[in-house]
Length: 352
Ligand code: ADE
Image (tube, rainbow, N blue to C red; front, side, top):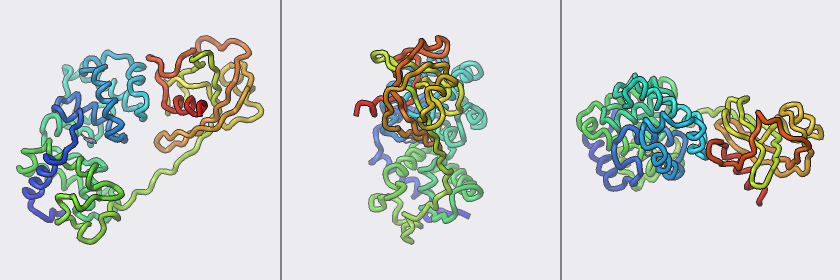
């Protein structure tokens, strides 16, 4: 059984006081509009606050409400998302906006299980939306908050399976207490903020922590040891040769419908494997392109979740026109032609 080392009321008042004095002014904290909360929480999945801030503001200017997002073209949403990574989030945002308009009168539902059914929304994001937007007393169990409690309560098991379920149960109980539920918006934000600023993964700032005096890990000198690391999914490496065919500022790009990653994005024509003497033949076979190789340049690495993609650029010229239906001549980054940030990395690598 997990047990708080101090009364709930004291925990809540320490956290809320700390939050009032130390909170960062972030654009999604200006009000509790569900649309803003939802978009920010999706952007903040796997992405740092400082990266998200400019994207969030621009995205809200482009798509100021659920209807505007539902009516947009997926290609344009992907362009607005370009550089944030994990593009499935943008597609799910679009799908969810359409479902909200078609089935929920253009509003976010207040019911946890209904929110959970929306694409791209798991228990964490559902908890964030319901608590931050609607003030419902539901917990958020993200990486920051689970790290904080694994230390505060000195949870020694790896945070998965039954250990995580136990923590979830503990938090459900915790947020039902009046001193927490009456302040749920600030309480949940305070926990997230503590996880981001004080109870950080590598060097927790225990000297400025309002809970240090009662933190069970801190008392035993375990604050840097907990939580115990999870076993990581092995990184898989892939190699691709990409053909750079320039016409002024434009390049020949093709839309990817082949792979599960980067699906729908416009890319340089690419073939599997690092460059070989037979690469012109392979480009002919795979893309119907008749190329002449001019120069090979240094490879560029790009991580997408557990995949490490190594792109080997070759500068080539076209010996006969590209088949129309598959290709476009485009300036990378042009609206309506979403590109992954690996394209920019390759272009930058040519300049250096
Ligand atoms: N990370 C996830 N959600 C957040 C929020 N609302 N504020 C700051 N960081 C976050």
